[in-house]
Image (tube, rainbow, N blue to C red; front, top):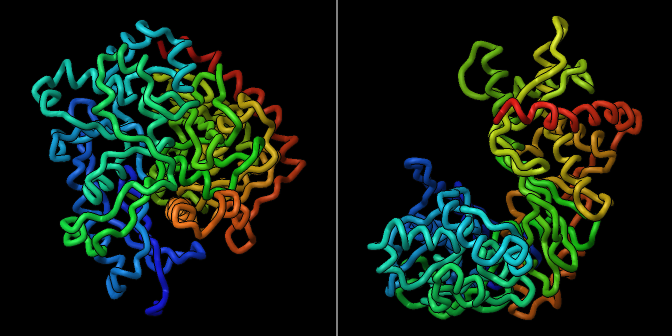
Length: 498
């Protein structure tokens, strides 16, 4: 690193870890560090301690900028997990652990809110359906079930990164992408909905000030500078929720372009000119570029199926744990179509392309000739069929598909997806840096170094960043009848799970 170079400190406060990247203006990361974050599971609740986020942020900041003069850090910007409820007192200290997006404890409160405003009206305002995982019903749950904590609550935040921003700047802000998941924001006017807040008995003063991702949240306070090593006054930008960051960085900018995330769970993301209405399971978010929207289809079963099968592969070999190398060997020796075995991949229920939390996984087509390789391939083909089924329920036919997430490291799975979808699949090689690259672009826009987000996305997708998997027409044709059978499985089995 040269003395003259200037950098952006970009962070992703995710569900399992806080990640940090020191970014050049070109978008290249010159240093990356990360630290795992614990999650607390108690009685079906899922929580994290915001103080763990801050402690990790401070340690990572010191490591990230070691040897870099503080004045060379031009800005701090972050992405983070969304749809959390983070209650703070008047001193911006947590009154309790954050209730995570995956915690659906507020179903009763959500049902009351939906009855009060009407399901169609709620979706019209927010772009989304009402359920117990949303922060607004969770706030009602806190008021009813933990009144002593609610009495101390003066502010609430929606994204993990916004707690870090509050500690850095003293300001309670939220970006419009992450706050689209609150169940309280009017997605079209980008403001808090008085109608929904009144129906939930919530005060608007508790909610964060809404900003676009490239807008400045404030400057680093002296006490925060002492804790994490930045110069006092260093600009801190609003940043974005994690889905907004990865969607932008995957280079999708027009209808028909899709990004598939094969994490433990997964999603399909697209961009459009408006919320996608009338599609159960579709989540709509305000995008980082103004007047654009992200249509996200979250599905519960993706990389978890891959990991489960890797565990079985280890068991077949008489070993404990997960053996991804052995799974890769099985896949290398497998046959497209898996010898007629079809796998329904709903290991943890499903919410898209079918909405059925009671569903479970199953195999059909087993014979004495079925091999371990057939089972391994059938599991990954099942997820690919599920993704195809989800894509077919969206408005625009696929024109391009990009792939990120841990599952994208399984090359056989990438080819399966290309063949099942009949589409070229572009797999990003620097997926771990995608969120950092996207939020760095927000800071560059806020600093006036680039003119638009489109300037950033236009530079993506080059051969040095992507490996491309072309569909094989003969296999796409061979998968067609199997896909037809797959789509009939859930309707045929649904009653068995009730």
